[in-house]
Image (cartoon, rainbow, N blue to C red; front, side, top):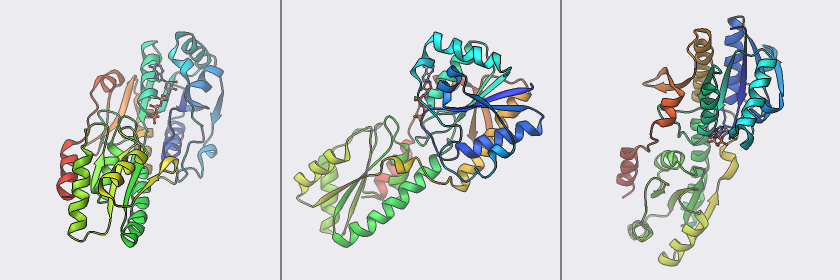
Length: 319
Ligand code: ATP
């Protein structure tokens, strides 16, 4: 293999740059040229492709976002769109492609693999909702961003004796809410994978206040309910002042944690190795702290599951 392509797609996540750097440097180490495709699959359809040099990826390991930019591209879901993409890959003599992104990005990679193009998919999403990998790039950083915010909110919640409802990202997946709720000592965690009973949540808050608790923190994943609606209901039922914080896009940004940088570097290097060894159409993941590969189709057909024992633990620790 002499030339490979690289793109980031879907929602950006901290650590994508560290992964880009690892792919470029590992490839150059193997005498392989890397062409960067800008704006995800949209850039592939348009032919927005430029050679990446060692220097292009200098001084980016610590930066959030992605120097390759990212995009959501409905056209790539059409055969017509993918034909244009394949034509550009051929024109640029690209022999293999590495894509970095979430489950939508994986679906696009699977389509390319089905079309016969050697493709490797690397999980990068703050949702940590890709099956068959313990972690995706960006989750740890987003989690730490949420925790920092929860800790600050806790200070003011304690001082003013208030309830805070904090909305975190997660449309279909509650991992960020679950992990941050557990790490932040939340009284209740609302996630899309589990139903909740508001009456029980209010009862728990009241029990806490009756034994002198000065604050309550409720973490809500955006996909299960709006924090504003939850807060209104809690205030109406409990008669206690309830405030809302919606963390929003700060959760996507920021310098990646050491964990995410290391994970991204290991994933990126593994992707190049797989292409070098002719081991195509694979998704890379972390399992028992080992970097492993599975077929992209296996990952896409595996069920996504929340860690139920962790959810139960969070409930037990917040009685
Ligand atoms: P995140 O979960 O962090 O938002 P993602 O990769 O899941 O990231 P999506 O917008 O869902 O983000 O997907 C990224 C892109 O992948 C889409 O814009 C589209 O170009 C492509 N894609 C998604 N689903 C398919 C599909 N079924 N077939 C082909 N391409 C797809």
